[in-house]
Amino acid sequence: LTPLEGYRMNQITIITGNWAAELELLAAEDLKRDIEAVSGLRIPIESETALNPGNYIVIGSPATCDLVSEFRKKNLLGYLEENDFTEEGSIDLFQLDEKTKVLALTGHNSVGAQYALYDFCEIELNIDPCSFWTGCIAGYDEGFSLDHVSSRVVASPKVPIRCYFDND
Image 1 (cartoon, one colour):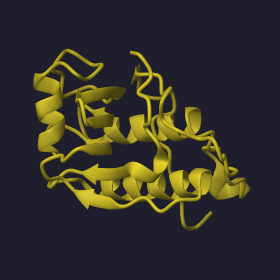
Image 2 (cartoon, helix red, strand yellow):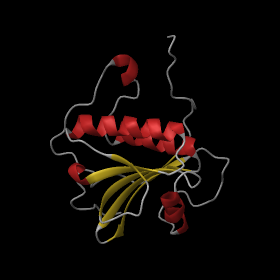
Image 3 (cartoon, helix red, strand yellow):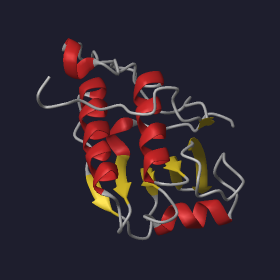
Image 4 (tube, helix red, strand yellow):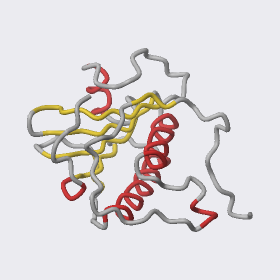
């Protein structure tokens, strides 16, 4: 993919599916917090609607977000086979039309979408996956943009659970 010029943080809306699972909604809040820490801007989260011209981060799976189903039918997502039993995710940056740019953080299911989102946060935003425990928060990056996000398939992690326990 070629870089998408002008894909700047102050023009982005995070979109979750109309049937988003709780873990997708919580992950979207984490993404919002991480982007705001890196960019210093306020990023809105909205339920899916028709995409007007603009820049979007779409989070979900075909079962939870109609936009993801549409992107999948148009072969815009990195995973090509329909396999509801895998938990891999996909990070895809594409231009839907001349005025609409999309970063899709998706998966075969909600867990795969969550893996894609947290992989994006770790690799592209430089977020420490253990920041909950370490307190290491991402630093502000004045020149940050999403122009050069690398599209990729995200495999299920070797340790398949990224979580914390309240009693720890």
